[in-house]
Length: 145
Image (cartoon, rainbow, N blue to C red; front, side):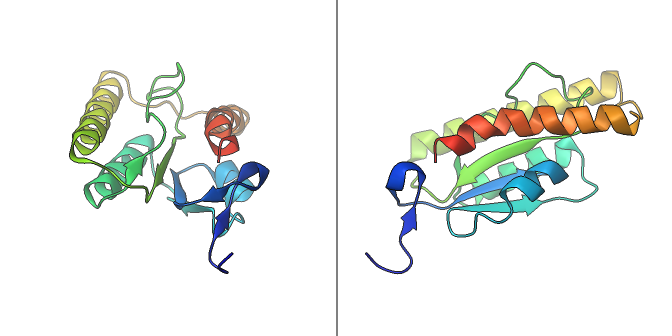
């Protein structure tokens, strides 16, 4: 096996590199050392909208959307943390259009919620809870790698 071959869960050979785009420091701390299989692009001091825009731009650059950006039932004007998984896997033209539509709709939804009711200034205990919720949402996707 070549030295740069990626090995995933249960010893499966992986043929793509995954990236988590996040503003959640818990996600950065938990997955930042995965190296060749999983990268973390941590956007410090960024909001959910920034994460969504970064993910959309990565998809425009050829990345594959691996998780729905609006997973979970928490509104963008409630939880300040967001994580989206992308990969460098092959994307056909139909998928590309679907991924862009999902991302643009998610960005519009996020903007709508934030305009209707801006994100409150949560205390640190609630922020910690929201970081944990966001991390929990991405864990199932990461566990499938």
